[in-house]
Length: 534
Image 1 (spheres, one colour):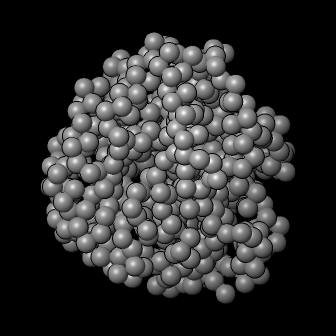
Image 2 (cartoon, rainbow, N blue to C red):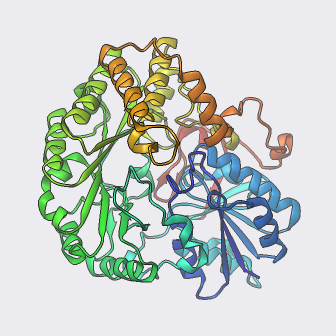
């Protein structure tokens, strides 16, 4: 029997052995719990019989169930899991994660969700479990908690940011580690076994499309010694040859990053996510000698005006320079672009395509991950911009957020022509380097993939967006094999609750936002009357 059951729903882009990494947020949550409780983790992304596994876990009568949430497809699966749990067991269901943090009242309003823990949950969730399993629960003691009582929604103030060195080591024994050690051959060349690790939290940069500045008020790092102790332990314990440093931005503090690199000293290989200008500040050849084999810079756009608008604080020349410097080493480069920004013109889309082609043609080790359609994420400056300027309708219910995904290219600020262009770029970018991505997995000669890649690049360069005959098939395959929930029409989707949600007292407020501790809740969130214990 496990006292606490933690669940990671599928996120819609989960391909075992390619895109799935360990559920680090749940492992971090479990660490403090294990001091007083038994814990079980069930990962929907990494099991062949999730519903059977969940049924078995519920038969063990857990005292609390926790579910993590990201905006998009994961909400759909989280809703279905919550209903499944409530139909079989009278047990408190707690949601956490990015989406629940930004929309706690909208989330907890659902009758199958009892509590929301906002932000970092290691301390708050443990305190909540202590209270609701104790003899005399006092929810006011729990920081960063949103809950409902007597038809109203209440919220406690946020706690202080955690000292990362004080947290226990990840309890890896709670998951089947082998599910997360298989690397994708094109992303991690030459790697046989890897796991992911996060050494810092937050990001101090103000990009308008990112929720991170809302979620973390302070950028923090583990000490270099603590990071190295954990990394070397993981490598020895699980026979790894690679660590994926999954920090939002690993290179904020160049000295700290260099100290860690020197401590690794080539014992195993590793890779990072890092901004272009931060990559320019470190000694890449030294990083290479210390074992770094890839970097993932978010480039986003090749149009100077767009880079300025989204406050990326980098230039196209800097992007080309970092690609050139990486090419002088053996460090592979995985780059990400975004397309479909509000007021982005077709000419500016063309500048982004040209930059991608330049990187591919001048750096043979570069991989274009994708041209991802811009998604207005909760809490971001971009979301408020498209609501104000383009009539974007912010979802008013939890299930309304299900289709806010990259798989949906339609946006109110995009006309039909630009939607077609963005759809073309998104799907062809997934296949522009098919020989590298899929050559070892599919029984197709590599020269076929390479010919198709040349055909994609030819259309990109000539702006032949109308030559998109294969896109309907690609969309169908994507929806069928990767993300079936793209079929869901959330305007018609019912979570099976309907009018019963009205048991929560919803009182319209004025335009002012409602503050919950350090979090500023978007305007639509203020539809809910929130009592604060602050």
